[in-house]
Image 1 (cartoon, rainbow, N blue to C red):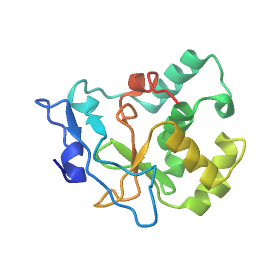
Image 2 (tube, one colour; image 1 turned 45 degrees about the vertical axis):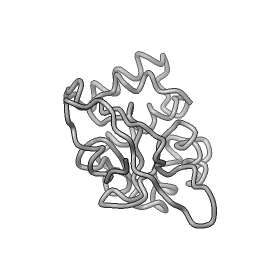
Image 3 (cartoon, rainbow, N blue to C red; image 1 turned 180 degrees about the vertical axis):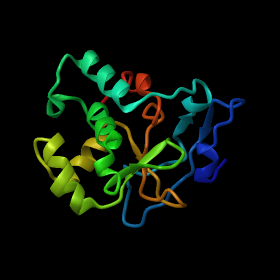
Image 4 (cartoon, helix red, strand yellow; image 1 turned 90 degrees about the horizontal axis):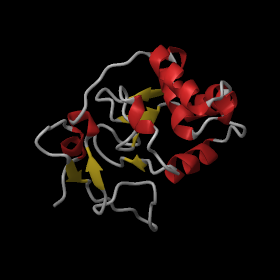
Length: 164
């Protein structure tokens, strides 16, 4: 069954997974878009929690053993970027906390990427995002936002189980 993007974002404790909407792409297969074969598990509905930016940073540096953000894995870097208030006009969480979106790609490349990535190229960043299993939402109010079922705003403990 096809569902609207909003349907798989709603936190419903009675259902732990739903099928993501199908997507069509003119000109070939779009690997970063949501397909009908993808099953999304809504971890927000399972274990709600609230943590602060300092708790996220502390947990991430303890787990990795490194304080230099540039040597961290993508989920750690991305969480740090999204937690930084000075970048919220460039890259931000969607209001529901299940997806994030780059609002200004040029500013992301010029201001954010050089601080967190060795190669500040936007297309390279998107390839890395795709390699980590993030999916791009193609339609609706969250169009062009990315989501991963283990990358949720207030649940940093789930990020440790993400694989490239």
